[in-house]
Figure 1 (cartoon, rainbow, N blue to C red):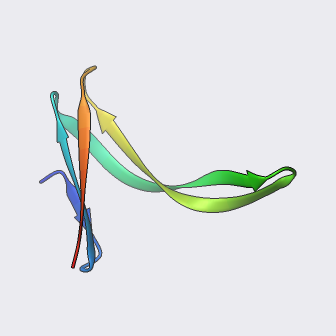
Figure 2 (figure 1 turned 30 degrees about the vertical axis):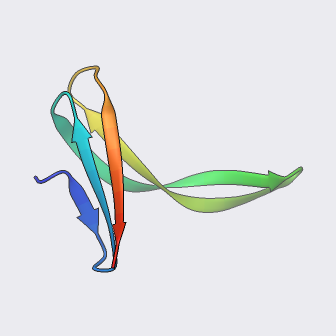
Length: 60
């Protein structure tokens, strides 16, 4: 497990002070206007212990 996810054009790299247990893409919600909500993809990162997490975004 290398701490990154990519679709070939966009890459998210994660660096943590503890071990990264998992990185998943899950459904989340956003509400840009009152009484309206829409689904959005959310990256969920799980660490084995409390610590700091840094994310780096790269595009081609």
